Image (cartoon, rainbow, N blue to C red):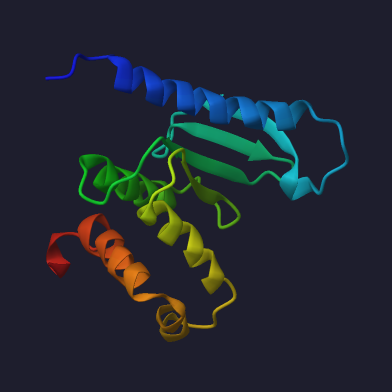
Length: 155
């Protein structure tokens, strides 16, 4: 049994702190940026459902960031990730301008398929969205939508 606070846990904390440092660096960078791209505040271990990193932007929107060194669809971490995203979306304080962000440290097929889903931006309806997904992305989407999102009634 791995020890609490052991090397894997410490590596995850280091990765989370590294991502936080990137946003803090952006906050101190004085180059002109659009308000939506200007970082004004960074908080680690924020009191939010998505608690790894919270970043306030110049337009007052927020990024709720989950930092994962690796992601695997058959882990408890996978279910917790999407449950935390759902809970964040359901909070009254979460605005439609806020963004949920997943930062993965290790390249994997799962991470690549999640990132490639960006190509569906600008779709007009759910049918078009699914048409633009690859088979692997549809399977991955099913693992997201069927576990925490729909709850026991839908199973």
